[in-house]
Length: 115
Length: 113
Image 1 (cartoon, each protein chain N blue to C red):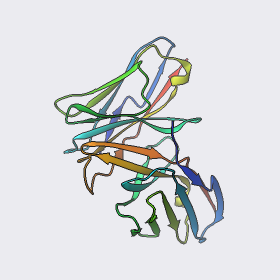
Image 2: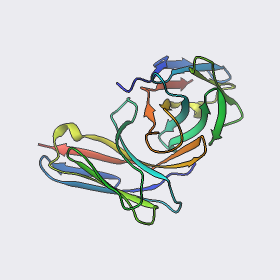
Image 3: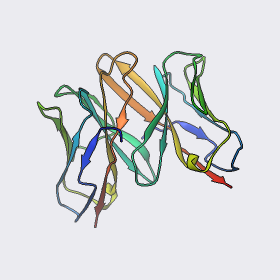
């Protein structure tokens, strides 16, 4: 158990809908990262938040957004869903992005299926 | 999106054999990490490497950070059935409080008795 929790574990929805994925980082970790894993694209970095502020962006679509709240949990919002958005979405957390000891620990993921 | 070149793509080995896999990149990284992922689960961190040339062990696992900072390898000695899974390398770039991981394409390991 990495200490990172994600809900829900599974989500099935229809095209055009909007969903919210939730992540709670390990106790004390300030950074939260979101990743998408699909069969054709592998594990892709989406976005990072550090202590409530966006710090790095990857291949995140404009239809997707995220935020980190004062209690450090994070939510990833996916809107206008398309079939191709079906994937595993992982959250990871780290203590501090700088220096050694900032390894990222992953949650169990949310499997999103868009029908 | 970008993925690092990881090889081999898959391996079938017998229990007790040693395994070697590697990862190469056209970019330089501050840190190399190796993760293992079981089906339907999140990646689990195995080893982290912080300096070029660094060689680090974790039980039966040994990994090295390449001198050029563009490659890394992972060795597993005396494989056992629970080593089955997908192994990913990941290169990390840090700039201040910003951090990004780029993952490799994965090596699927299957161990036969």
